[in-house]
Image 1 (cartoon, one colour):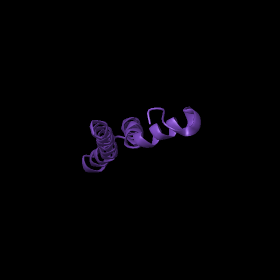
Image 2: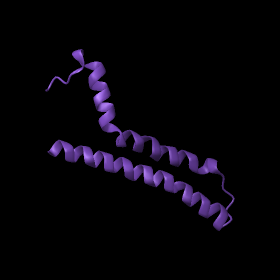
Image 3: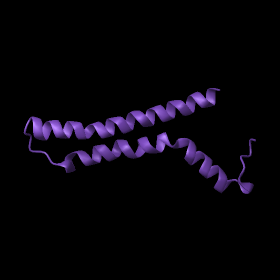
Image 4: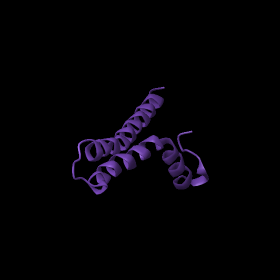
Length: 81
């Protein structure tokens, strides 16, 4: 059971990172169109990607673990099972 809680925490962390990464565009839109700041999308893209990419990896953590186990373990099965 504790293993499932750990995975849920990992997936929740990934979801939080994705939400914050998408929210960066809200900050961009408010700054550019609401306040009239002289900013471009290039200013926000690195922050967006720095949150979205690890967030998506964490959200799909279970898939990556299963994928690696199938390809690296002979016979395609987990050694602990």
